[in-house]
Length: 285
Image (spheres, helix red, strand yellow):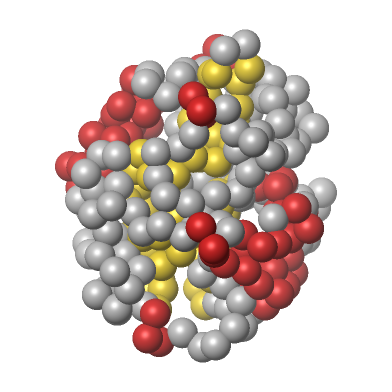
């Protein structure tokens, strides 16, 4: 798929491998033994973007030694209101809007990579987007959800593919929630290239005791031999089966860490922290 020049992201793509170019300013492989990553299980407040960014500032300040923080899908606006309002068009901003600007500032302030959501407006279209900012405030990654879920009638299908970027010697890509059902078929080469898949979600299950993520994510990790970091929306209103229980899955399919399900929305977003091994510690593919 050819991306228009005005949408070309300002980072070096690693997919396909033949066109690999290192992100300027990032140290070469071997300089960093591991990438410390954190999934924040955020309980959203619908429509409270300013307060959510203030909470994020405080929460990032409490993270020690983390290289990359991942937020859940649409957690700054909320995915759905307590009154079951699904349309998020009113919260849409372009890439130079106040939310993106503040996210870049927070990445600089806390000296980490920050992967966070945006209801992105581009012309007449609106996208369910994940942005990745570096510690210098540059936007390093940009993913648009390719398969909006049924209630997301406000969202256009994503059109940027599945780019792979390199952070401190680790190749990273992303998919947003419902896209996980299609990504292996649609972007298998990108997953084979990547070593870490960021997976922000607002996961929904038909029943409280069902847990399809615990089957899908280990199978995906084994198939493509990569880590999967899932930041899921935390317990919030409305209460929905599937909330909580964010996880990190190793390339062999083992669930390395998983958060327990809270009974009530926590005052501070729980953080799941894991170390992604550097190049010298990885098993052959």
